[in-house]
Amino acid sequence: MTDALKRLSDEGVAIWLDDLSRQRITSGNLAELIDEQHVVGVTTNPTIFQKAISSGDGYEQQLADLAARKVTVEEAVRMITTADVRDAADILRPVFDATGGQDGRVSIEVDPRLAHNTGATVAEAKQLAWLVDRPNTFIKIPATQAGLPAITEVIGLGISVNVTLIFSLERYHAVMDAFLAGLEKAKAAGLDLSKIRSVASFFVSRVDTEIDKRLDKIGTAEAKALKGKAAVANARLAYQAYEEVFGSDRWEALERAGAHRQRPLWASTGVKNPDYKDTLYVDDLVAPGTVNTMPEATLEAVAHHGEAGGNAIAGTYEQAKADLDALGKIGVSYDDVVQVLEDEGVEKFAASWNDLLSSTEAELNRLTPAEG
Image (cartoon, rainbow, N blue to C red; front, side, top):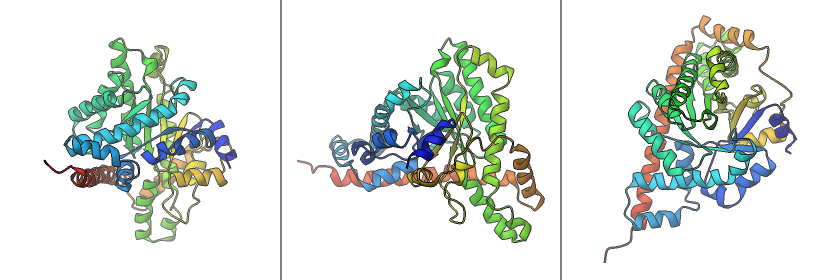
């Protein structure tokens, strides 16, 4: 069952799990995935935490203790989520040590309601890094316009960052620039660049979902022939951009000072359209130096029938550009698509965070001991 995952790992793809819950931690499931399924990292987001905590599995005692202390719902959510990330980081610590800090990482996201506030995002990132207090943590910062200077500032402080919600090639270039600027700040401050790591989470399946919807609306044979091509093409061109930036003189100067590359991370890799193969966004994006973070269903699908068989990106750039260009020719605006996806991504995570606050508040009220 793990041969396909081993092949994927051997091709230079770091396999991360896009999920976390206390039950997964305490049951030994996470440790099992690390030992048996080549999982070397974990990503979380507000939606994942909302689902985990709402299910209630394993949180009762901590919620009761927090209720007894009469903490605010904001503090309760932070205590619960950082506890899970800290425990997961401890489980992954041997991987972190064995890979020299490259993998064995757990990501936790800044409050998504701060996505358009640079100063608050920086303050939140510092607070989360302090709260979790593990060297193998990534602080997730969204790649909004306000997020870009926050990325530079946080990297400049020596905090490792997972940049999330990247949809467009233009924004990805800006993210890499923000990362390099952060490293330059850290270097000027005398920090050890070898301790700073970063990934850039380029979202995949949502691109096809939005573009396919528009192609269906156009309805021509030409439009339908383009369905299911945009997301992979977009990600492949992102890898081309990665190769260019991390082959530049600017990067080489930082590398000589001990810096590590910001790896591309393929996120949103669960296939939404049942007409597509369920391993599409893994098999077609194999390339060295990448991360693929998968929901468990995708991980199991890849383990069972994944087709990783060598670099799937090399030599594809011309076709990928042609696929994206063809969309514009029939009236699908790439710029509009990626802006809609970014706006929706921020809104969805903020909505999940608000749902998490509401459900946690209800639990705190239920568990608060009677006065007297």
